[in-house]
Amino acid sequence: APPKPAAPAGIAPPPAEVALRVSDSVSVWFTSARVDSAADGTPCTERVMEIRAGARTIPIPLLYTREIPAIASDSTIEVHIWRHCVPADPYRVNLRTGQPTRIGG
Image (tube, rainbow, N blue to C red; front, side):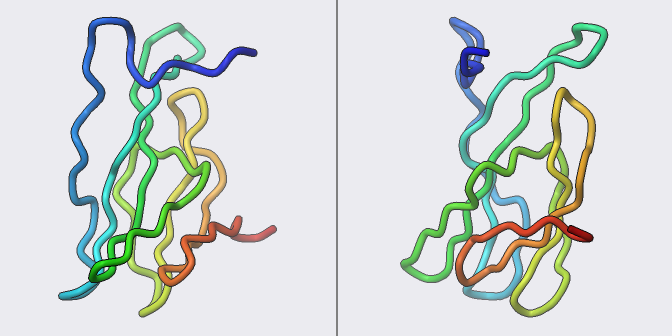
């Protein structure tokens, strides 16, 4: 299937915004977005995230979500990946590397 557009033609993607403050120097931001569709055809916007730690920006690859991540430990967050506008597998994300790992897999 062809890649989904970041936003439908003529609609600006949502701006970057803070999703979660982990500490005084580390935060998780929603950045890019894609439009997806639920089984009934209802559209939704799913967002990717990045970690901002001081001057460093660490992308979290290929993990689109519609929920605010939760702090799991001092070095990880947890969030569900979303597919077709519904939550799917939970992932743990390393705050130092941005690497997502499926929980339970």
